[in-house]
Length: 247
Image 1 (cartoon, rainbow, N blue to C red):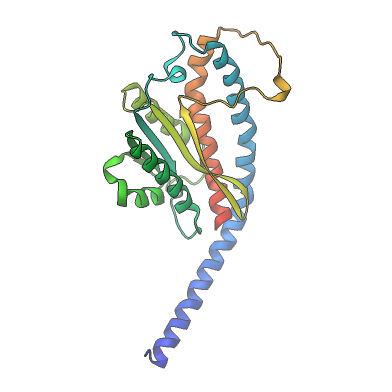
Image 2: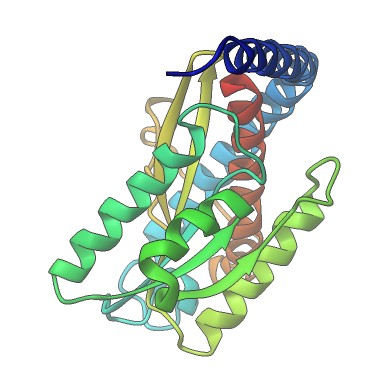
């Protein structure tokens, strides 16, 4: 049975921890608003680019001259899971929920006889996935030293993804992140970015006819790689807002 001194030490330690976590909560609250504004500002651009590319891609469906990023490799044997999490913990189930979604997808693909590879963005996701899938992790990057996420960070990750795709390392790439909904709700999301899956035209675009200049092939060759960086950038911003909300 613990002595009175042990109980006093435990109480003092608990109070000290409460002070630290209270300070962390206040810091997270102050940073949340800015992160939320950044995430919400990125959504219209990412969604509109996705919609425009969806229209152009529909006109190129089944054409052999379509860019490789659009038509894919013709196979879905090798899957790359791009798992984006935070660099720090003490944020409830934020990191583990994203990892759980990625783990479920990985196990399902392996059960189907597919080959799975992992690209981890963020220290916490890497630490959790390494315990079970260390041999499947082919890339890992940390953004711990980055004070404010910028498009250049997403471009760097996108360039590495595109290089792996050009080398024939994988056939399908899926992005995992948490979409910010509110302070108490984050939606774990899996989005296929290579080959891209577009939602298609919305009601406001029904029956619309577009004339593109330059031609569709040239536009797709330029915009498809950029769209990957845009979607990754959006995911990183959504993750940042979700992280501070969870804290």
